[in-house]
Image (cartoon, rainbow, N blue to C red):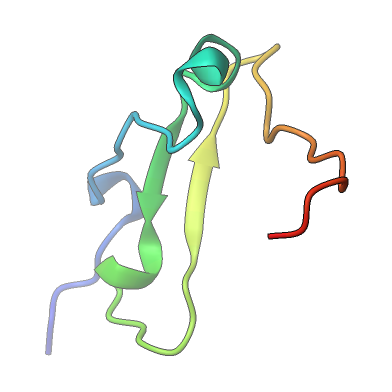
Length: 66
């Protein structure tokens, strides 16, 4: 039986895929990919910790279709 894994043992990454013009607004952020660490294959679960004042996301204005 595998040893239980604690969330704190999952390595957190401090990066973002936002463009560089938003990096100062969204970083630092510490994101842990918990789904990968716990072997989940059908669902992704992440824990993201943000310091006070940092943005969770940037708003899309909806004028451009993707």
